Image (cartoon, rainbow, N blue to C red):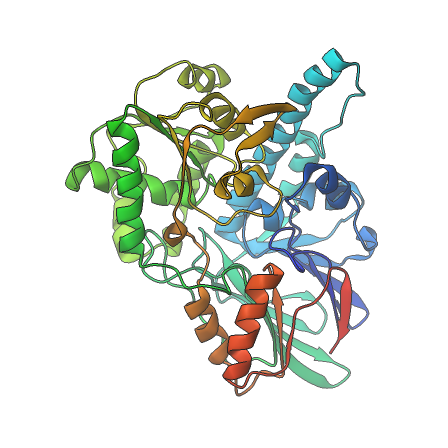
Length: 464
């Protein structure tokens, strides 16, 4: 058996791990790499393996850095099944199509600039037609249900607690008379977060591929993060500004709306308009209703009563049209805008930042991990100016970063995750983390006598 680390190696995004077992190939995730734009297009367009030789795909969850390159995979010749939980199937179908719309819209916008400058036009990474081809290839499975994507590999998916439908992947592998159990963590969620159930931890595994995004630090308590977010909102509203939040349309947006609802109902935050400017978030809400099996008891009750916390909020408006989105930037009254994408690289959030970054009354609030070389990272690093669609904007607005709202496990849970299988685990592979974070986590695990840890390089192959 061989593992080929073709994504999320020495970085967090672009998840792609190709397994070679019994002469077959099984791909875990097929995500978009997010980073410097000059690099991302070529990196996402070109696969490091023969796409037509892949026999099956297992998708851990619907986030674009895990699912977003499936249209290219299919466009270049993949014809097999794409296995995922039923909730992930629905969400990924929406998110991939939304991603394609964004790719097309951004290419159209950039090409207007290029035409004015006499530069060559750019092509979108993929189109809506490419994305539509993917939907028919999904095959939904229940949590805990056994299936055999390729001969000799029995797979079960377990709740990862990260977003709706997210899963860790357990693989029981038999090859040449040898049996091993491999566990792929996907993105690990957190305890005591709103809406979702807690993540299920592995047990008795031989090898594990584990994320290390926050290997350098533990998160503050969710209640403390709530207080920090509330204070940011209060400060900004009191000075007459807008709170602009880059947020993933699925998962993070719903959690933030849940929090804003509670703030205005019970914690004294002024009632100002809250806008979710993401067509995907509107469509995703129905998916939330369709899958109560993914939620904790409180949220399941909301869904049963058709009172999902993101829907019964009086100050909340979902923005659907482009004209409605543009109109928000012409207004000067206090408001809160949640918009995608979460790393501020594509979509309507880029336009909101462009129109609000030079106003000192406003706040751009960063609520999740930001990949290097993304606009979200440049904002989180408080760079004095940013380049948006080829033009330079001075950052005069306030920047707030709230790590405690992250949907990723912090260092403490990552330690618990790995130490729980210390006695059986022969080797641990750390992925989905930058070098600093992975190194710190590796050092702490070695202190706890987990010694066989590897941090694979991009495109590295390891024989088990």
